[in-house]
Amino acid sequence: MTARIDHDALFIDGKWTPPRTDGRTSVVSPLTEQEIGSFPTSTDADVDAAVSSARAALRRDDWAGLTPETRARLVRRFADELEKRAEERATTVTRQNGMPVELARFAEGAAPVQLLRYYADLAESTPLEERRASQPMPGTTIVRREPVGVVAAIAPWNFPAVLSMFKIAPALAAGCTVVLKPSPETTLDSYVLAEAAIAAELPAGVINIVTGGADVGQYLVAHPGVDKVAFTGSTAAGRHIGRVCGELLRPATLELGGKSAALVLDDADVERTVTGLSTASLLNSGQTCYMSTRILVPRSQSRAYVDAITAMASSLPVGDPMDPATFIGPMVSAAQRDRVLSLIDQGRAEGGTITTGGGRVNGVGYFVQPTVFADVDNASTIARQEVFGPVLSVIAYDDVDDAVALANDSEYGLGGTVWTSDEERGIGVARRVETGSFGVNTFNLDWGSPFGGVKASGLGRELGPEGLAAYQQLKSIFLAS
Ligand code: NAD
Image (cartoon, protein in one colour):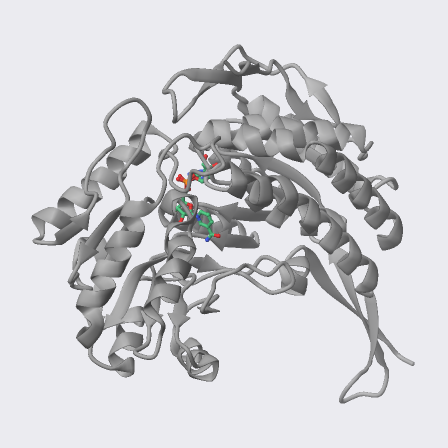
């Protein structure tokens, strides 16, 4: 029996602060369906305190006034403290959202530490000022990069630690301050982040954490003390935030949903492709935004691929996410499980053929069987809506032009993959797909390269130097000489 995790305070202004009300949110294990912990639910007054602490830190010499080198040293110290707690954070994420623990050890334990170090190095080596010869009048212009200010960072539950860090690491490295609002399903691990911040002696107010659901997020996004919003979550919420930020003329980075395609070319090796698809299409039990869940296969090889994908999906170990052998854990919540099941039912009702899975796993836990739909029509609901669960659609195509057209016939454009024995041919296909990121025989995010979506998958980019630039405001200073 693992101990409950209960917290009584909020992390505001560099210290544990009593919340302004008695309201609490409980966290339920998706494996046992039992409550495993709780935390105070922030009120508007708590958000006000967090934002004003972040604003005050912006003006103080111990943060925004530091040289990039000194700030980078503090960010590295934060990374070191987080590294000491990486196992605790990873397992806390697994207990909350059911992420298979080996994945959590990398994505939620190690990766946030890597990101802090990456951005500390990058900020240190990126000059804050550049001098340009001006035109058409003779003179010089200094182009300066300044911190954008107070960042409202809003994270989803699927990869809570690393997706928060996509925002926190570049923001801190740029000299911004942050108010983080994690998802209510996955807030407990952010207390580990706060403990690392305290141990690293980050100046007060540089990171603050507020808790709660969409209402708290809405209040934070529209707060007059916020300068930029960085959001990862659903397209519906992203549209709402985009509208609010548009009205306020407030910059926003929006990382939203996806319905990406795997384009399997006729020269691909079936076995290697299907093995690759197990992670490119089903990582984190399918609860990953960039999954290639529409699998486009040559019509002449359709039968062979349906059989191989069915065999792969039905052989994936489903079970306790704390067991390192598990590949498919439970869905994060009963609501998410029911959403996935209802989309499967809709696929069935529209005449879809299910070759494996198609229902819940009997017993305790919010499990859904890995499910494959064969001979899917790209116009059907199961091919158009993001399922966010272990559900794949196999769609036959006639030629590569047809495959590219099918891939692009989607509201979304976040990820995608091509599978081929000819890498150059794969790169040619990659150039034609409307998306923000794409993999040839793989899909691995790269801390040094931008990640984000086109169309309904979002606005702006995270990661890489572009991710740092998103937290910097440009100022031009014109000189007569
Ligand atoms: P969600 O949009 O319901 O919630 C995300 C976060 O936003 C939560 O913290 C929530 O409390 C908050 N929130 C919700 N509505 C809000 C509003 N109107 N204003 C401010 N905050 C609000 O999403 P979710 O269910 O937690 O996450 C799953 C979704 O996230 C999927 O659609 C998935 O594709 C997407 N996602 C995208 C990426 C990406 O990088 N593009 C990565 C992971 C997940």
